[in-house]
Length: 409
Image 1 (cartoon, rainbow, N blue to C red):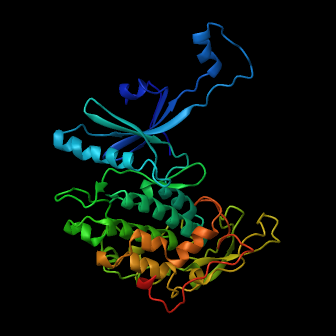
Image 2 (image 1 turned 120 degrees about the vertical axis):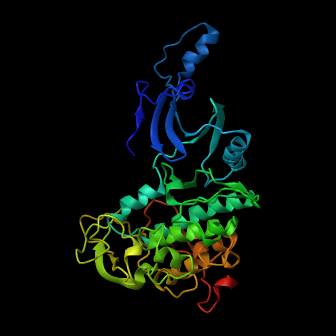
Image 3 (image 1 turned 30 degrees about the vertical axis):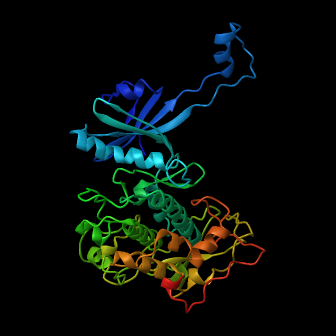
């Protein structure tokens, strides 16, 4: 993301930030807040100790402490009164209660200055899931195993949130942050509220991801599950979700007729190579999905599913440094859309129009496919480990019998 503000000479000077940090740069601006990348400069431990000993040292082996980098979110509007202040502080309370969670952005500090709220958290170097999917989507659909790992990471974050007694209510790729290592963390708790939600709470997120019950003022944990289901559609079908129109209504009625199959291997008609990073290296220009520079908007399709790219495991190619530790064929739930643990079936469960019919986050993480992925994965969510995951010499987790009902999982 191109910085919007660099250095003290910028007109958007913020004395509160510059009094606390050595470097400040705006990296994002939204309707309700601005986000800054801030740096607290490191110092030489030897120089620090010499202040007390009176004997300065110039030992060349003494290296300075590294710079500490954080993100600071500043509300764009001042508090309008005590009620508005308490409403904005809900985000702080939620983050403070989730400092133990591995897949929630780590809270560091918060303060108020001139009636503005500031929230300091860890800085996630690799940006947002939204940007990651946008970059990958220009080349082709994300590989199956990383799709499942992304769902797993977000699911673990949601599990921490729900078990701590909160609802996020604004789950979307732009609010999923990625660390340098490729770990996903849920951020932006501006709409989060304690569970059960108080009457009259104002927490309607982006229309692309909200469940139908949100429009009725029903704020509950299943709303987060619905949002995760739509994120999964966005990833697995490589599409842009509509924010209104017939397809928007259809998705909230449980109608997936305009959505391509989410099970990649079920609809492959063209081929492409992937490099060692999992990026398709050859495009078929008669493939409507790969021929686009951005993901298609499913509201533009009328039931015709776009063709998707399959994978050629070409170990002889001089351009591919593929390790021979990948699965050579997909597990059943990655190839059969009617398998009870496939993405198609799980997503139908997650976006059920009736909130009570959706899985809890614990049920979702306990599905055989999610358990298989959790046991199989060896690296962070965005790290390529093979189209269908790494191979393993030990026995694989046994999947549920295909006749098992999803609600029995």
